[in-house]
Length: 253
Image (cartoon, rainbow, N blue to C red):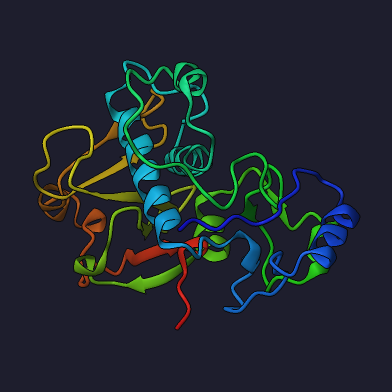
């Protein structure tokens, strides 16, 4: 059975704290010390499954789009888009705004809906340290986060073995010779938009040459044989940082 918490869509920390004080379900703790407040975590299994399904579908949908949405101009932008929109209310108006041809029959979130989250629209932590109630009054959370910030402040390490990845996980690379060295890809698993087959990965290349770049969707096998070894998600590749999972999906030990 789905559980719902009391939430408030506001930038006013005092009001958030007042709601928290009045509701024992509004948990201001951070049991993992990873900077993500427990009130933001998806503790219900149905919510975790729904988020993962929406996140992967939305990321993959942009591969099929005739033109990616204007905001999606690099790897982090694709991830921010899919993360944010996975938490929305998925009705017909929303689908039309994203030019989605169909709305998949995936359950909605039960705990909260973006932007009516306990943090409003500011979903991404951007400073180090565990969460404390004082964070609600500062510029600790934002709507924007670069790939490095998503890696360090909003996800946790799973493994360097790609076999440990589950749909919705992120693969991070660090290419020290590039202007923006941190890059991220989304592990889709089998497609949800086509007949399921081999596990897939989707990512935006970011701008390259004189062009804006593009969204690519290779299979795991194809990426493992990338012509440049630095882009292969293998344990032997020092540029591959590993598989990471969203903090909001983190389970109690």
